[in-house]
Length: 547
Image (tube, rainbow, N blue to C red):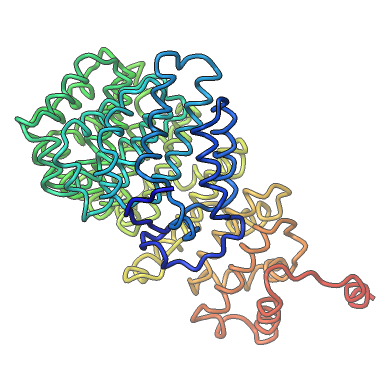
């Protein structure tokens, strides 16, 4: 077999010969034999299946021995040629399977080539593959282009090939991609291209053929396809300020805002909000959303009495929850209307179940950040009423809502260990006493539930309280809480064991632990910690102690 000088890469991107991975399943003679059988056999379906099965028996990227038997360029081209043999009749089951098997084999073998070898040797075949009617072939080609653009040294090769980028955009427009894989890979490749200034220019500059092609696709495809394209545009804008600048002037973001403002198509409006949400994760995205009045419009929509608002509001809450993850410090000064409305939604007995669940989830996210806690505390009695409502729902709500409320409570009581801990601890103490007339008793009952989820949520609350001296005193003074802590029989699943062990370890490491608990109890806690989370007491020992 004639070899061409193409370099291999291992799984870490190192050149062939650098890996010492043991690949006992690999035999240097088998691959050439199987390839030869494939090209010479009259039954190519069976031969390609044999080759696919063989390649799937070991980690191909961890087999440096392949350097000695890598297919020649001519043999790679013969494999590509097999794809064209069934191009005209790809819809029969046997031809679909054959094409998928060829694509699988090609994808594995091509993954061994360095990006520049791949691009220079098989450029035309990859472009042709994008035009193949079989999705597996398109996916295989998409994966190869993604490999090239992910390599910063060779990304420029694709930047000089608008036709390839057109093909990636066309992949977003495929309607029968049931797995979503080709859309996912094309989206990723395009967002990577946009990360460099030249790539952002290629995709979004006013006179770019790629932008023209993108707009053509937006004009002729249905809303599902259009939103796929908009998702990629937003993803590119999040990762690149250059892309953001281009998209502000080339009307792409403006077109998405038109969908957002379309009051006649409520579903498009919902999807538009979802599509815009990632922009809340970056400063330049936040500034643009503010400049375009998106925050103001969404806050107004939360208070809307429109009968369709119940469809939109959960997505708006998710939008603000995402905003809270990155800009919690701005909630009090810039988004007080949202916080007030969130409290009204949770506090109202007329709120629908679905909306209440979305609101509790949103509140949990806001409470996860110090800035969110400070912003909510600024609402005073209004937020205290929300805490009491969450406490009641945790006691008497449906199982799913109860669990959501308990996880929310665990964040409510989390003072953290950061720079703001001293400011947050008094808030946690105040809020703790708003939950119930006997908060620890209420939590203790739930932590003995036969269902795992509420036990985990309450245990997380205990862990968060363990950093706070006032809470340790409350635990010490409760008549049965210390006994509960040491009782391993309250848990029956691994996750529960680990959560409880984490609580005990956190109590032992608390600065105030030695001042608050008696030495005898601390010794028992240390014994528990030393024994480990999964320790099981021997039956004979239990009998002796009970006797």
